[in-house]
Amino acid sequence: MAVLQDPVKVSLLNLQHNFLLAMPGLVGDYFASTVTYLCQHSKDGALGIMVNRPSDLSLLELLSQLSLPTDPAHVAVPVYAGGPVSPERGFVLHSADAAFDSSTQIAVDVMMSTALDVLTAIASNKGPSKYLVALGYAGWGAGQLENEIANNVWLTAPADSSIIFELPHEQRLNAAARTLGIDFNLIASRPGHA
Image (cartoon, rainbow, N blue to C red; front, top):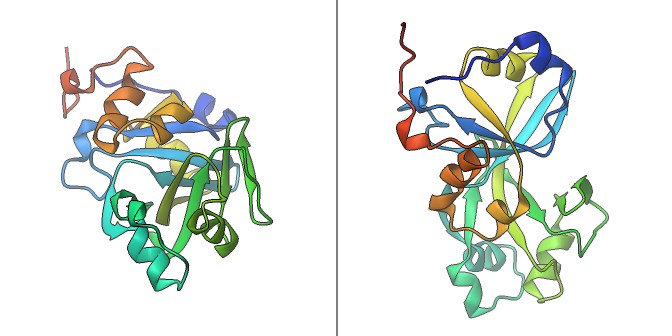
């Protein structure tokens, strides 16, 4: 059953540090089966990073392309497809135990950094204890995200950093849905009429 959300109430909310869960009706869409972490949300728009779609690129390959030191352990760390906007641009969501000149505090335990200094620290094993590296982001103009939520494209859920940093990517969507008491496997892909 799709959850209808009042667009007026949604527009009054600041959804920063929330998850956007793609509703099952987005089959075949770029965002199908994704969970997106909202890093910024204001009356001017929103910016989020998809946190459950690994790309074909490993952190080892990315660091090597940037001529940074590599560790064989980096081969097992995926670089995520953060979204369709600026896929050549890097973003690092990370724990708040390390900060850099480019860091923005999103929540008590989550920061976002966008410059090479965070990757240099990670490559030298001097970076944050938890991190997710992504290329690209998801972006919405003023009112666009609120309209999509009102039209049941997205379900919002409070973010939990352990879902981002500690769970395997394939478990993140259902884990985020469970924070709302929802089993995503039981949600119909099309709204019905009673």
